[in-house]
Amino acid sequence: MKRLVLEGYFQLIRIEVLMLLGSLNRLHEVVRRTAIRRTKRNNLRSADELCHAMDLACIFYPKRVMCLQRSVATTLFLRRYGIGAEMVIGAQMLPLKSHAWVELNGKVINDKPYMLEIYKPLERC
Image (tube, rainbow, N blue to C red; front, top):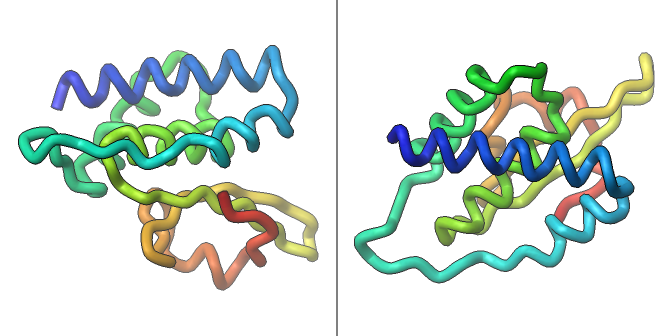
């Protein structure tokens, strides 16, 4: 588990650098183009285990991790381990707010399960 948390931590750093040096379009492109990796049988991890590791990485991260950074990092992390995660960006009209989360087979896996009741999905990648 320590190794997974460390991998998640470095993924958060990578995404923060992308957010600082690039545009949101570039970040979107990275998520869109990242393929689901084929993994060896002995390297299989559950989505719950990987999301838990990312949650712990966020706790140890020295800055507050915002939803976009967390969702991009989690999506890429899950895809690295062969899990077909999808990042969703949604918006609420009144008051105007946006939010990002990760879904697997249409189910929210890194946030509250009722996100679809609050936010209307604008983009899935």
